[in-house]
Image (tube, rainbow, N blue to C red; front, side, top):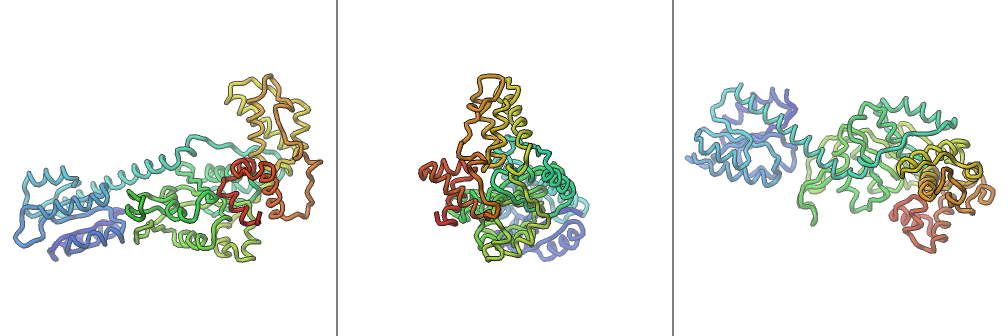
Length: 456
């Protein structure tokens, strides 16, 4: 049986009945209607793969003009629709004209069932091929940055990291939803990509969506897509991130930033495994592996009713808590050497090692920005270095952030610590949001949300 939905449009009840009785055994779904005037409604409510369209509707008509008109109308909605024209009047000129206007094939009535099935089968293969090409084009345009940047592997020997890797290898082959928790810069995206890379979906799409960078108005159109004309700038149909990730993994970063109304919309998609594009009413099935991440305390937020409990249950089948870099001991030096080698190769330098003073400085430093900050520090140090060793001058570490000068009480809540870090960054850069956000490893939008949250 073909995995296709076929729409048959003909004003003859006998034709509709015979086609339906035969094709319902051959394809997933058959929809019939007597008038082409119903086309707009049917196409908006159903995901149609193949359209069988009669060419004459007025009594006594045989020139096929009506069929050509409705063919052009259908292709104006979506040029990739597969349309097979039907007529009892077989003229070579008419068939040629129909093909030139975009018809996929042409079949004469009455047909032989074998011929009809062969035509439908070829059309179904064409439709699937077209859908795959369109999906790849959309993925390429939406993910060009991610596809070219590459990903770091997990580097670390600390017990916490080894335990996380052990858990990761157990979870990855399943389709269980994973929630990754940890401070900014601890490597949540790296772990998400490792889960994907060790799953049966590894050859499919890994879709990273930064929810912290999406405002409320863009949420639905970006995640669920939109139809042409859904709003002023919607000049063509566009699939959302869930559709583009179909068959692969979608990683929703900074999920703790979603408002309650957006949480409700996301929950509906996760429960039903379907999306509805803005401006459409038809549901499209999606098959994705869900990974989410946040640096926010979701359990506390759920207790305060600022994060939906049912959504939290849905996303955290398995929960991974990533340790801060300052808790990983000698992993700091392991990572520093790793980044030194990576950036030495990238910038064509022959840097051999970190000096003893540099290693001591790295171990004493507090690393509020975690692994991301260490990566940026080592990249800058490699660029600034003139010799075979990285020196303290190359590091340019902030003296205010060494462990002995910046101790924090153990009982300090994560939220209080985050507020303090945000306030310090804003004060340091004298209110310059762009610079403060860059130092914290946040987008401007994400920093503004934290400013509002903490009343800074």
